[in-house]
Length: 147
Image (cartoon, rainbow, N blue to C red; front, side, top):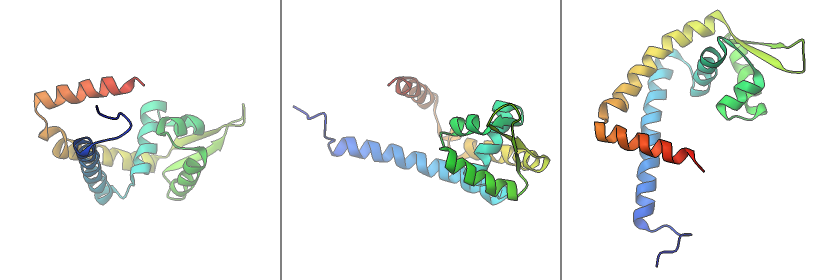
């Protein structure tokens, strides 16, 4: 009888293959984006979320929650992005919150990055998938959402 608290060699092999594939694919996408735009993964995540979820503006806490980052990590990252002219931070008058706004420069570099990221995702991931792969990934994604 198999102990559910232990993984056998086959279990570890499939787990490591899954992690390795994800890291390789994700790394290739981020590398291409960074080479062409100078944006880091975090930079892109911030800019993309500001536009997608907030029409260019989000409260700092909403941004942190959407990225699954703690407040301190996001604050330090935003400081670096603000120095590069990609975002602005402004205290909200109504409460203790801070609003993050994408700048024209930030929007411009995001607009440059989006087609590069799309092309890299297609090249390093989507073009490698069969219809059966897509079906399996979709089923796994749905199943893994529930705790």
